[in-house]
Amino acid sequence: MNIYKTLSLAGVGGLGASGLGGYFLLRNQENEIPYIKAGDTFKNRYSQAILEEGSELWESKFNALRQGAEPTHPTLIKAKAQVTPKEQDAKDLHKQGCQEIYESELQNSPHFQDFKTYCARNLKDGMGSSKSWITEDKSGTKWNAKLTSLKSHDEGSNQALDSTLKNLKDSLTESNSSEDSNKKEELKNWCNDAQKEIFMGEGDPWFVHAGLYCVE
Image 1 (tube, one colour):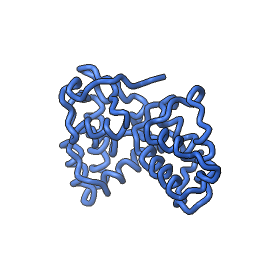
Image 2 (cartoon, helix red, strand yellow):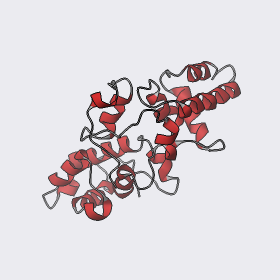
Image 3 (tube, helix red, strand yellow):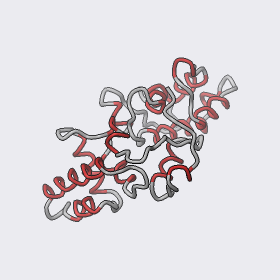
Image 4 (cartoon, one colour):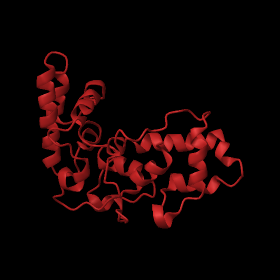
């Protein structure tokens, strides 16, 4: 399933790098962007990433807000300001701010990074606690098997790779290429970026490929 439709940046209302444009360039390295209709909200466009009221993930997102950069959404700004003096008030404001973002229009929104960082389920969250992301550095051996698997990646059954993984796959030509520390670092860096991406469902290519090449 291809969730992308090729459009120019100008075709979605001149999205800037400070808003959605920056995300799209990271999200899809083929310079394609998801089709956004006027009136689309965060909630209906990213339904798989919305946190339910009782989700355990609220605590980790609140900690991200506590430790992270200053948000742009006014309610989240208030929440961050209350973290130390009134933590429970801050948590309530955090949830309120996220709910306001969920219901807001996606196109031209200045709050996309707030949504992604402080309010949304990401790939790592979507993968669940039953899967362990590989954390060892490029000198470790766990990446060797993943590179060997990537070398024989079947796009017919496991979806097309993005440009980064495809270029890495194409470079795995030597018999000992899976032991190349630079190639292991490339895969590790891709995995580190992937786990922060918004969870779009288990059929999303990023989720599928992270499950194949980033976890054990």
